[in-house]
Amino acid sequence: MSNYTALKTAIITAIQAANDLGSLEQVRVAELGKKGKLAEVMSSLGKMAPDERKAVGAELNVIKSEINEAFAARKAALEQEALAQKLAAEKIDITLSPRPENMGRVHPIPQVIDEVIAIFANQGFVVAEGPDVDTDWHNFTALNIPESHPARQMHDTFYLKALDDKGAPLLLRTHTSTVQSRVMLNQKPPLRVLAPGRTFRSDSDQTHTPMFHQIEGFVVDKTTHFGHLKGCLIDFVRAFFEMPDVPVRFRPSFFPFTEPSAEMDIGCSRKDGGLKIGAGDSWLEILGCGMIHPAVLKNCGIDPNEYQGFAFGMGVERLAMLKYGIPDLRSFFGGDTRWLNHYGFSAHDVPSVPTGLSR
Ligand code: DAH
Image (tube, rainbow, N blue to C red; front, side, top):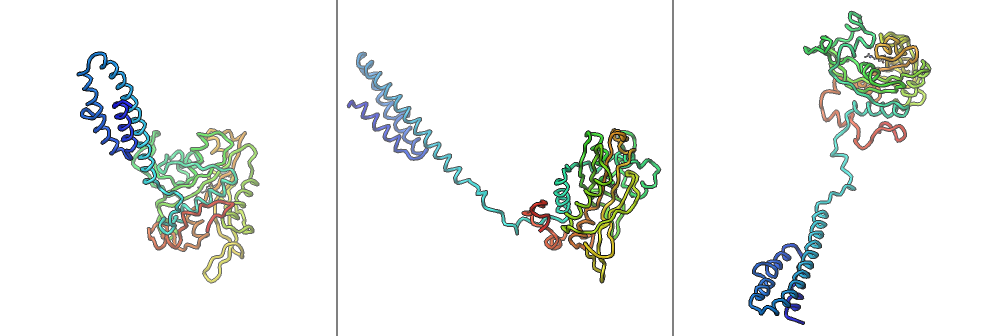
């Protein structure tokens, strides 16, 4: 074995013995750097006779490239190892479930909205949304509530200073029915839409807050009739109140955007100041509904000779108060965490019809 081969073996052994990137770098400086052993040997070439230099030079070149290869391979292996160690150290154990007591509680409003969505999703409805700041046309005119219609006064509307492109003041939407006009203008029937959201009216007392929540639903198709409306809503209240036989009745009513219009009541009993849903000789109104007025379809670009539909609208706070026995409307907006701990829901329990709406 020539001296050069022995040197090669020594250097490669040192490279392989390096067990982290720092010691590998030390080996590089000591053996392969400008002042390293290999450089020393290379510089001795200059003193050799031409023939010897040629032979030794060729041998040294082979040795050098073998050493370089060994170095590169060791470096890659150590880098890989370092990366693996770093990843292992930074790993987040996502199998560890969060502690529910630290996750806060879901407010009854989003809870009830999620429950209602779960029920109607089962009937093939999809969720749509519209803006809180709306135009007079979408909120009123399109829904067959023309200017000077007395129903406009009933809505206690908040008007804004800003004007829409027709020159009418923008407003805070007074009902989620306005999503009807937006969806009908932008989508083609058949439609099965549920529109939950915030609504606003300039009204504030024990039973009214200036901001509250509604859920609008509507169906437009060629053969949709009042029987569909009844079936759909009866199924809904039974699922929502989790009572398969809750009594219901439809009472004639008036809304400008539906004809005929009705209000739906559920059976209840009122005894000793308490309200019990599900049986008894009393009735409780829970939503407004009706067949979509042909004028509304027409205003929104749908041919009323070809299509018809039904719509319904309900107040979320009212549903929540009835289902969960919450006595005071204003407490929804009080921001009291003790109230939320009492009436709130676990973030783990996502409402679904098959697994249960509320726990
Ligand atoms: N928009 C009505 C309100 O705010 C609720 C309503 C009643 C919606 C009847 C409807 C309906 O779609 O058919 O009081």
